[in-house]
Each structure stands twice: as C-alpha cells, then as structure tokens.
Length: 621
Image (cartoon, rainbow, N blue to C red):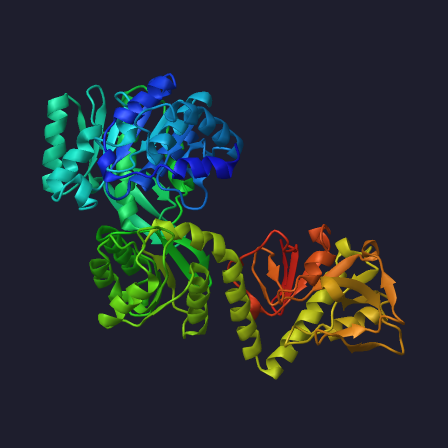
C-alpha cells in the first residue's frame, strides 16, 4: 500500500451526522486487540484552544523525558501530522502498514467505520507500537460520541473554551454543547476546566459531581502578563498553594488567549504531578518556550509582516482582533486580510469583528467541500462596504496580498485567516511567493538611493573589502571571483583597482545557456562585453576560464540579504548552481544596508555566506 492508496481508503469513508456513536470504533478496536487499553491519556475537548493546549502539554511532557503521543485535528500541511510521537509525524511507511492492518478488520464489519474512526484506530496502534508513556488526545467533534471517547478513564479530562459551534450536531445552547463536551468525563479521572461562561461551568461541575471526579478550574487570575512582542510573551504564574513562589515563564505562542490556554495546560500539569508524573519546573519552562503550533497567529515573515491564523468562528475572530490590538495597534484600518472561510461558519459576524482593522479583503476559496466561494465572500464584503476582491487560487491570493503590502506606504501587515483548511496551502506556497515580494522590496529600496548615495556607499564597501583582504585569514587568497556592478548594485570597482595593483587575479561571471555560469579572467585588450542578461562579462573567446577549485574567494552581489547570511539574487540561480557545495567561509556578500531584510525566505539551493560587507562595515557570521 502506498501513502496515496492509504489516503484514498481513509478519505473514502466520510463522516456524516447520522453516524454519531461509539459502536463502530468499539468494534473496530476490539478486532484489533483494544490497543487503547494499553495506553494512558490526557483527553482534551473544547470549541477553541484545544489544539494549542494539547501542543503545550505535549511539549512540556516531552521536555520532562516522557515518550509522548499527540493526536491533533485537523492537520495543516501533511496528513501524517495527525499522529505524532515525540514531536515527529508518523512515517509514511508506518502509516501504510497500519492502515492495511486496520483496513482488513474495518472492511469485514457490517457497519463500516468512518474516516475519523479509521484515523483514531491507526493512531492507537501507532502509539502502542511506539511505547508512548502518555498520549495527548484531542477530540475531533463534540466529546460524548466522538471516536476518541472510546478510551477508558484518562489521567485528566481537559475542557477548554466552549462556544456555539456545530449546533446542528451538538445542541443550540451553550449548556447543551457543554453537556456533550463533558461526555469525555469518566469516573477515576481528574477534570481540568478552562474558566468558561457560568452556564458552561455549571454543567461541567454537575457532571463531575455525578461521576465523582475532582474538578480543577484553570483560573485566569493566576496569570500576570509581563511583556509581549511578535517574538513571544512572558507572564507570571501565581502559585495556588501558600508559600510557593510564583513562576516567570516565556511562551512562544502569541495572544492573550494563549495565556488562558497556558494556564489550562499548567493546571493539567499540576494534576498530573499529583497523579505521580514527574514534571520538573525546568521542563515546564522549556516546554512553553519551545512549543510550536502552526496557523495560530503564526508569524510567517517579518518583512513584509505576514501572519497566518486559522481562526474560523466568531470567538476566534474576537481573539484575533484582540491580538491585533495588543501587538499591532497601528494596523487598525490598514491591514490587508487574505480571507478564506467555510460556508457553514458565521462569516457575517466574523467580518463585522475584523472589518475595522481592514484596508481591504483579498478572498480565496479554502480546500474544502464546505468552502464559501471566494467570489461570494467578496460580494458579501462589498455589500457591507468593505474593499474586497476575489482570486482564483490561494497562491494568487498570497501573491496579490504581498504585492499590495509591498507597494503600500508603511508596508501594512497581511493577515491570512478564516479556516485551517486553507492554512496548509498558505504555508506550502508562502516561502517562494514571499521571497519574490522580499526581492521586490529590497530592489525598490536599492533603487531609491540617489546616484551620489550609491557612489559614496560603494566607495565605503570597497574600503571594507580591502580591509577584509588584509586580515590574517585571507593571506592565502590569490584568485578572487567578483562581479561588475549593474542594476544599481553596490559597485566594487575601487576594490578591483586596488586588488589588481596588489597582484590578485580577478575573475568575473560569464552566463551560458541552460542557467550555467563560468568564471573567466578577462584578457587585457578585449576586456568585457555586454552579455545576454545585460551584465558586463569577459569576452569568453579570449579570456582565461578557471576551474571552480582555482577560486580562493568569492564576492557575491545580491538583491536582498538578511543578517543571518542568507541572500537572493534576481531569481535565475546562476550563482547558486555554479557555487553549489562551496565552503561558505569563502563567500563574501557585498550590498547596501538598504537591501537588508530582517529574515529572508530561502530555498534549499540558496547559498549562505559567512561574511557580509556593506557601507557600515564587515559582519562575520
């Protein structure tokens, strides 16, 4: 069985509202030897925040030395994300092997299991095979009749924020939905409850009394926010027990709502400790600092600022608005929203919440049968007085939104939001499209320099290159592969003049068909001619062509670079192919400070450098 065959089989058995219940998953797992009975769980239900809470718990437990399983829903980019052990996705080989095993039993059942039931069974077998100490198990839909509720009493039942969602399946009031979510509570478990609406709290408290389960409320009053930026946030956690010190913690996830999720996870940690799990404070601190959870106010790029948020309902929109207000207050009325929403969501209320922050909406269609077509969403938003347009693909929407941001005064942020079903496509397509936008931004900044500024800065760059060549580490350099400036590039001619007088051999690039490049030392008389790309190149017929091994040092031009030593050119890849595999210590970048991007999107083929020379000096990495 191939991965595609496994996916085709799993996806052939879609879930429907008429198939709620545990009968099929119970029979399927019994046929497979009840692997779930050999595992220990933290079971997490809720409307919002359960994924982030699960991610924090898993990372803390992993840092404490436990072999962890994680069963999140849905996946973002790769189906294998659905089943993780110690932070790594199930391998394609294991997925195929276990799916074949599950299929043999599922196909023999009179009432065939649904898609999610099949995935649940595959996960249970994987977690047993990998000898997981504790599995953090996220509910798929609801709680009481969700396939994950087939497990026996978990170590902890965790219920996060509850709002109105899937009302056609779960009930049309908060109390009804809370009763369904509280269906995961089993005698013998401790229960951790996010500090919810009083109506929700009453229901969960009543169920805990019925089951005889200790209830632990994750009190938000224990949290004291300290500092916050797009790099993360810090907070103090007040101890509940008298005499214990408060903890100061760093959280990589952004937004005030994530602090509420964090105290839910930390309350669960306290419960697990009482149940015998050894989780030191160092593991808690490291887990929160290192946790990653994609598409939850995730900063994909700083320049231009592009944030991906998979929020899909009004509660998520309110959290997003609050986070924008906290982190980017100046974006009100300026943000560019890349929006893709499912038709069964309350998109009218979502738009009402976020419209005050929008300069315009660029609409796309998420990859889902339930998606609201981009053109319908754009028409709806236009009818509400918002600037909105539609794109035929998510890739087109990303490119359009980045271009809008790059061209707008002050470069406003792009916020991609509306559905986790579009998040994977955004994350997959984003790096290459963003790289093009960054190239455009850096080129515009370079072009904005006056001729006098370019000349003065180029002279300073040449002086810094000369000083670099005088350093002890460059004493063995004899042959330098450099470039003739064009397209407003930093011009190293003054350095070339000095190098020739000092006896260095200078070679220059010659571009050839098929994206190839050669290094050539020009003849004294014939010199240079204009090449096919508009670059001055040595006349190849009379030049001395060098093998790459003869080059001691390379001085590279670029369109954009970042402080980490990443660079990008005009996109043809000539340098990357020619210099592939060369020691980065031999590569020196020459550019203007104006071309610097905070963090450059890169590809595997991009060459990193170990030295950057600008008018400000030499940076060694």
